[in-house]
Length: 253
Ligand SMILES: Nc1ncnc2c1ncn2[C@@H]1O[C@H](COP(=O)(O)OP(=O)(O)OC[C@H]2O[C@@H]([n+]3cccc(C(=O)O)c3)[C@H](O)[C@@H]2O)[C@@H](O)[C@H]1O
Ligand SMILES: Nc1ncnc2c1ncn2[C@@H]1O[C@H](COP(=O)(O)OP(=O)(O)OP(=O)(O)O)[C@@H](O)[C@H]1O
Ligand SMILES: [Mg+2]
Image 1: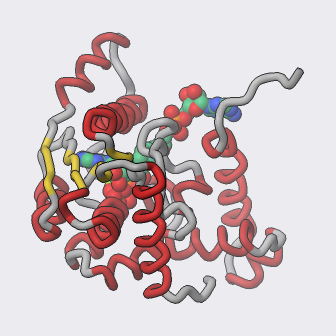
Image 2: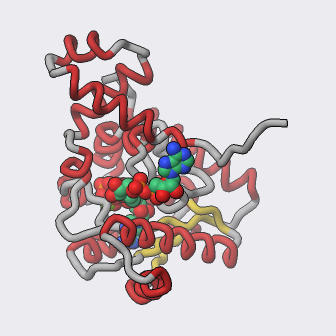
């Protein structure tokens, strides 16, 4: 992986958030706080950049589990204002309007419901929505289109997951949040690495060589000592999700 000066990265990230808040003239930001590391890191960065009074955390559980306690821990240890909004009844309403949903589709409705609530608060409070997507998720399409993928600014978008782990440690994000397995939390027992079929450590090594260095698949496989099928699998994730990384297009006249 590339060598990054993480203290410098934190400086860049906080400056970025402060500049965007000033340029746009907002009163603050809204962040969806899940109890996971990406949203914890964004909340910590925003509080550092803007002061805790200008950061609102929205905790939007569907399940009542450990993540809810962890999300509270993030907001309370930072001292930011937060609200807990249970989204189950809203998601149920969508589900009955559609006439039933499979597990993945219901998960996407959860992510999009959270997006609607974040923007409702941003509109009403003259704030920006800060997204939490990182480069590993963005490049593989591991996010809900117009759901958790939607935001006004996404400070972590150019940082790989393994880099977010390092930044979170330096920011003082609670250990238990750094140590837990990344999960979209869209169904019980879901973990990113199981669903993606690869560890973030290996994924990031492959993506960095493929996308940032432009290396060929065979060379990547050789250098990492892995089968070429794994590299091709990652290449396919990147290709298949191209549509998630751009605005909708139409024919050109
Ligand atoms: N080629 C194409 N060109 C243009 N549009 C295309 C398309 N293929 C699909 N689409 C559209 O995209 C839709 C599918 O995309 P989408 O609705 O996002 O759904 P999809 O990619 O099927 O599911 C989202 C994935 O992201 C994961 N996720 C979601 C949320 C959070 C996190 C997390 O890490 O926290 C992870 C989730 O577990 C699942 O694996 C299709 O229904 C269709 O509308
Ligand atoms: N229960 C929730 N309450 C509020 N926001 C949520 C909730 N679940 C998901 N989100 C939002 O969706 C984002 C995407 O989830 P994702 O799982 O990728 O990130 P994370 O939970 O912060 O970190 P990790 O990937 O390590 O679990 C979260 O960062 C958060 O902004
Ligand atoms: Mg999560």
